[in-house]
Amino acid sequence: MSDLMTVVLPGDDVPPDDLPKAQNKKKALKLGPGLRHIPPETITTTIAGALVTDARKNAAWIEYNSGRVSALPSAPISVQPIVILDHVCHSRPRQAVPSGGSIGTQLTLQQYLASVGDLVIATVLSSTSEHFNCYITPHTHTAALPHLAFEGANRKNQKKLPPHSLVYARIVNSGKDSIPEITCVDASTGKGEGLGPLNGGMVFKISLSMARRLLAGRKGGVSVLEGLSEKMGFEVAIGRNGMLWVDAGSVKATLAVGRAVQEADEQGLGEKGQKKAVDRALKKI
Image (tube, rainbow, N blue to C red):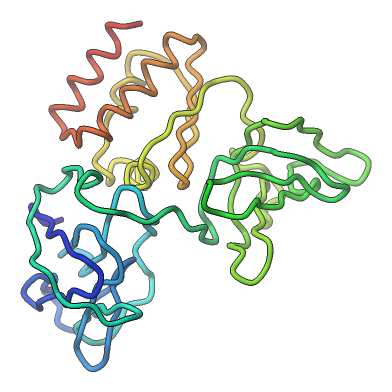
């Protein structure tokens, strides 16, 4: 990815020089969240954040800590893209910031918006005869989690979850035209595949950008969890709704893991900074 990220505001036109240049001219440019193509060759921003590019994938997207950030689109566009927003805005001066730095205090950002396929950590609020009502974020409607949406569940054997229970689930209906729905089972296999109730542990608030990076594994550039796992054992669940669940067996160890990730997130730590954060966390255990 590029060494510098350019901060943009809604309605900014993206200069062609700021977009990646593919070695293969036949490879179409891929536009991610926050960018829109206006034929024939204009690209405009729809949200405030940092313009990020990946020359290898010939892709560009807008990243922002407290807003919804999706995975890169699988469908490329066939022209040099330019993103625009839903209404006309005047362009404003843009500012370059180091890649990996935090822009959360510089911009007014949007809340998480549910998207089909997202992994989320949800809280059970109540139960009806057919489903659990689950809280995902303060900015989204409660989501329905069917009683049968668990591995091994049937009419005679339904999961019982009291209020305030935590579940790791996948969004199957984002709720644009109906109530949002989540599931704790893979429809193709009938297995939980790591989804289901989260017992014990603690939940830590992280930015949506950090959640996306953690879910991307090594490609996300976050090594805190990997570094800690070399010295201790723990379980984690990462929600795209900005939630990190950690269970390290004890309160002290769990706090050390969760706060190390939060430190890397809030301070925008690079590789060296993350290693120091890991060392500090291990000394606390």
